[in-house]
Image (cartoon, rainbow, N blue to C red; front, side):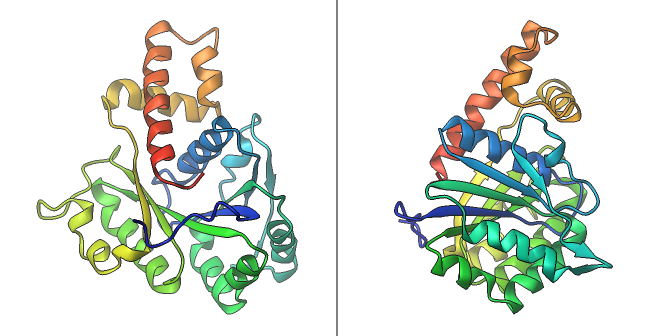
Length: 252
């Protein structure tokens, strides 16, 4: 049984995508989450607050609003008020994704704490999930540090961790993520682990890179007239595996 139960009666579900390390697949995960929720028939609203790379907003198939909540390295309170108003008044049963940039990770985390934003959302009846990405390879240590800040800063909030092994195996001294100290010490905070499907980096890895570079959804890629039969088959297989992972995470 999970420590945090996803409230079926929640007015709305808010998903903050947060990771202090850039270039690890954060906006990719945001796009995957958006598509998965939409596939399962959810009303999805999204905000891209990344001040450097508004990648999610570049997907023309998605309903994404760009909000510049940063000014001179700090949160612009007036602009954040606009976002907060939208979150608090989110329609019943909707899912709202907030894709935040690595450069504003610390500033946004501090602002959420200092202004008791999570209590305001809870008082409105919303469920809030923090999503973060852990990646293998050279960035493993940096993504773990970003996760440590989330765990310490938001000890009462459920975390959904996306494990992205595209850049390398997620392991330290032969240990898997579940054996890491951060997970063992704070396992009650982890609502779900979503392991992104693995595959041949030269094949499905390249297919996904091309899909994201074009800012296309899986549906567009799979049904695209210019997509080869082999690529369509690989994308469809990956998409079905991803949907299964998200469905099991109990965030719907």
